[in-house]
Length: 231
Image (cartoon, rainbow, N blue to C red):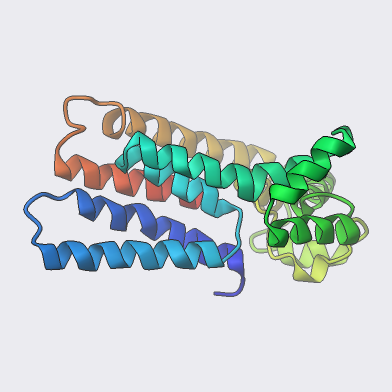
């Protein structure tokens, strides 16, 4: 993989497909242990990718297939790894609260936010990327710039991000398709994808009658995996 976000995307895609296999009944102990080992390896690799998208992968997977106690553990981990460090850097937070949150937060997360603030002037460089994407779209909003043009355009119009040569896309499917094909095409594609997610989710996720069967659990895993790739 070329970067940590691509790694986390494909591992996150694989996670619900692996976890759902644990729901299958009549598995012998050896098969269940092998599947559990695969799930643990995927989870470990996701954590080591240090991508923020892993929180969404774990949340959707745990919420769909595991019990409430595992979900509560996940929320506690997210608070310490992501929310508390983020809040501690907000300028309107009192210094006493900010210092306490930094004391209980892991050092590697605090260091990452400090680097972002120092190099990009924001807690997330994607904010600059999205702003730059909107600026590029405004130059040709109707027809766009053509397929696969994002990386070249970010390099040519690099007056905000200061690292345009490292940007391959806008990190947002709507903005990316707007750059390539124009706003109207992006709206049509996004609207179709949204309808597909909503109507398939009604059948797969919210249909109580078929929700218990293992084949529907497989469908649920594929739905979650697809949603993770889109997001």
